[in-house]
Structure formats: structure tokens, C-alpha cells
Image 1 (spheres, one colour):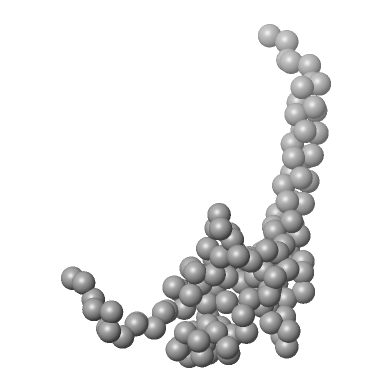
Image 2 (image 1 turned 180 degrees about the horizontal axis):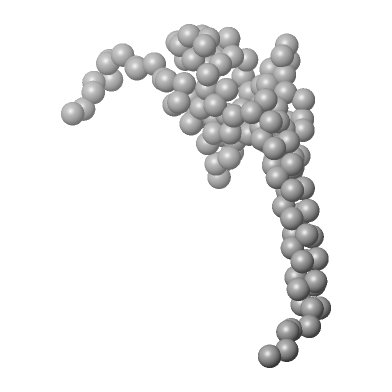
Length: 131
């Protein structure tokens, strides 16, 4: 069913706003590079005719995906993907916790690998029992 040009435009959801900016950050025709600042949430909310919380939720989704950083009082910026997640100021607390947990798991696996190597050397050096 075709909508007439006079039909009121539906206001976007946070998910739709996040999707639009995701494309502008990661898509082939990207408009934002690492370090670029996204529009101010209040201004964008007014332009789109949505509540401020809707834009904040959209930016929160992008932050949780590791695409942007929010710096209180400064704004929202495109994150540099070459910098490890969770190490920059303004990164998502969830990513910071995840990065710390992954580091702990990595260290534990490395330690277990070393122990396994030692056990295999010990077992390999034993002389088999005679029949």
C-alpha cells in the first residue's frame, strides 16, 4: 500500500537510529571516522522529533557494540578500532569488565598449557614397564 507524500513521517526508534549511525560508522560509504564526534544528543533528538532518551539509548547501543565512546560533558565519539576495547576513557563499563575477564582467562589458559606441556614431558620420559 502506497503512502501519500502528505502522510506524517513516523518517528524513528532507538534501534533504527542506532542502525543508521552504525551504517554511517562502519558502512562502505562511511560518514564518520575514528575520533569524529556524533551530533549532540539533544540536537539530534529535536531534529528527529524524538525524546532525548531515545537518542541516548541509540548511542548506548553503539557504545555497547564498541563503536563509540561517550565522554561526559564532551559528547559521543567514534571509537578507534585499533585501540583495545575497554581501555579508552569513556568506554562501556561492560566492555571494560569483559576485557579484564578475558585477560584473566587468557592467563589461566596459558598457565594450564604450560602445566600440560610439563606433564607430557614427564610421561614421555618414563620408561615403559617390562612385560
